[in-house]
Image (cartoon, helix red, strand yellow):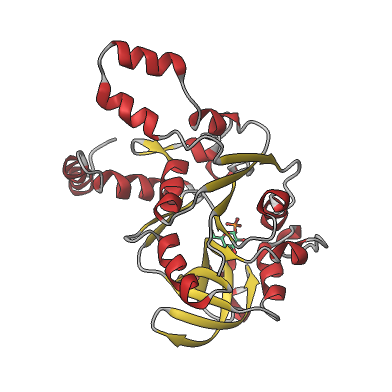
Amino acid sequence: MTRVRKAVLPVAGFGTRVLPATKTIPKEMLPVFDRPAIQYVVDEALAAGIEHFIFVTGRNKGAIEDYFDTAYELETSLQTKGKSDILAEVTRTKPTPGSMSFVRQQAPLGLGHAIWCARDIIGSEPFAILLPDVLVQAEPSCLAQMIEVYDETGGNVIAVEQVPEDEVNKYGIIDPVSRDGNRIRMRGMVEKPPVETAPSNLSITGRYILQGSIFDFLADQAVGAGGEIQLTDAMARQMESQDFHAVEYDGQSYDCGSKLGYLRATMAYARSHPALGDDAQDLIDTFSAARLPV
Ligand code: G1P
C-alpha cells in the first residue's frame, strides 16, 4: 500500500465570516493564543508523518509563505541578543527545504476546485487534505488516527463527528450503513443537506485521505451546493467504485472560520499551553465567574 506522504491545505478563502479581522491578514495567520492557526494544522500533519505540504493559496496570502520561510533580520537579531529560546521557537516553524509547494486558485469556485488545483503536484498518490479552518485537539493527532485506519483498510478515509441535528445544513453529512467501533461504512454523503432530509448527524470534519483518482471525479467541475464545485460530490461518486471509511475520531474540533469558534479555539489552546495553561485557565475562570468587563 502506498504511504500517505503529501497533504493539501486549501487556504485561498477570504475569511468572510471573521471580517474585518481578515481584511488584510489571511485568516490562517490569525493567532490562536501564541501561534497562527495554520501552525496547529501543519503540526497535526507532521505528527501523522506528512512530508510534503501543498498550499492552495490566493491573492493576499503571501504572509503564509513568509511565515514558513527564513526571517533573516529577526533571527540574526535574536541570535545577537542571546534570546536562544525564542530563536528556537521561530526556527522550529521552518520546514525541511523543498517540502512545501504553493499553487494559486485564481477564482473562489469551491473546495472541490481548490483541491483540483493541486492535481499536478499530487500525481496519482493517495494524499491527505486538512481544512485549516478546523483545528482538532487530539492525541494521537486526528490525521494520525485516520492513517492508522488507512494502514489497515487502504482506500479512502474521512474523519467525522456528531453535530447537533439542527446544524447538519452547515456541513458535509454522511449516510452511514454499519459501524465497527469508531469505523463507519457509508453508502453516500451529501453537502449541506436541509435538516429535514439529512441522512444522519455525522458531519465531515475537514480531514480526508483520498486516492489520487479523486481528480478524475473533480475534472468535470460539476457545480453543487451553494453553486460551488464540491469535494463532497466528487467523493460521493468515487465511493460508488472504491472503498470508503469514515472514522469517528477521538478528539475535539474547533471551527476557526467563525468568530465564536475562533474564541473557543483560542481559550482551548491557551489552557492546554504547556507553560501558560494554568494561568490561562485561571484567567478564563475569573472572567466567567465575575463577568468582569473585558
Ligand atoms: C467544508 C466541506 C464540508 C465539511 C466542512 C468542515 O465546508 O465542504 O463537507 O463538513 O468543510 O468544516 P465549508 O465549511 O468550507 O463550507
